[in-house]
Image 1 (tube, rainbow, N blue to C red):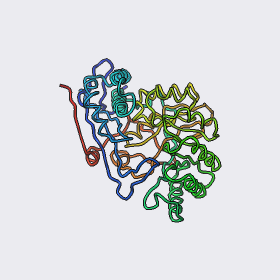
Image 2 (tube, rainbow, N blue to C red):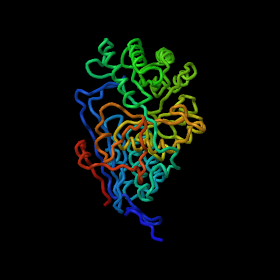
Image 3 (spheres, one colour):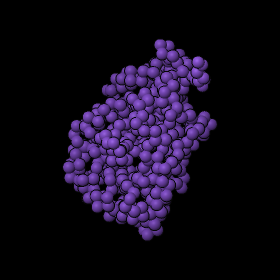
Image 4 (cartoon, one colour):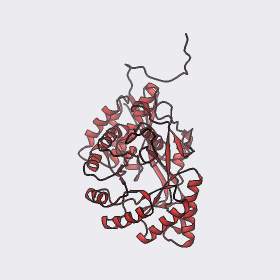
Length: 414
């Protein structure tokens, strides 16, 4: 019997593979009149950093970092510090490389750009490992519990000429935006608060709740806008309006404040997008800070560290719903992680958000997510399909990537 298989580029077990070139792409695209605001900052552009790892076998892997702040420091960390350890390494051993890189920067880079750099490298290594074995990353992580993931819309930022007010016209625009997400098929909506006064923001939430009705799940994200006392005031209003989680109510450093809010409020407290590695999440779990953990794989340590964070979360009976922000690589990364995330707790019929994980789907303009992949992600019946091809299962379109690349830098093996 002859088995006919597609021609594939793969590396047999036992052969060698080495990373021979690292290329970073600093990506930026202005938003112009579509700029928006959170409680912390204006977003006049979309930015990120993509990392391309090339091997001596011809395989290429992609990773992402540099999403939260300027991407240039992350690129500098890669080329000036980490690159010498990455070049010549076998990408099929991502956990080994992760420990080597983290030990190298532990004294001065436990959080921030260095961890974003390691995250991007690690994701690219898992992409390469999947391609080398002809398996999707979610299979390498232990197997997929689901082929698609329910998406929640992140929207209702402060935007346009109405960004800083709650006039009748502004509230009507906000209500129309919220309804549009429901019309697009979303049954879960996350909105922003914290930029305006508590009274003004509560009014915004009331208008949104009225617009979408009682059967659409509503979440709220303050981007750490409040101190503990004001977060308590807001949290009680959110409970009244049947909001199902309160994300980043206070600054991420205030672990005692997080624990206090969990004790005083019935609404679940979500957080962790500004936390890094198993060590940071160990503190969140051990001190009882969050009901929902939100590591961003492109910042917290990539797939290798996600497995450890997830194990800690499972041991503390805490659901993990990754934060997602950035390009199509970031979304693909989160989908693979979510595919391999078990129900917390197990039930015969899982329910989205209750014990079935969901994926964040930002509804602000984002050409970095929507334009650079050959097969852009689509919402179908409120869900996003998990890529099924080898590695991350996505293909970057070179000319489209070049359109958004403002700085391209290479490091090669000597």
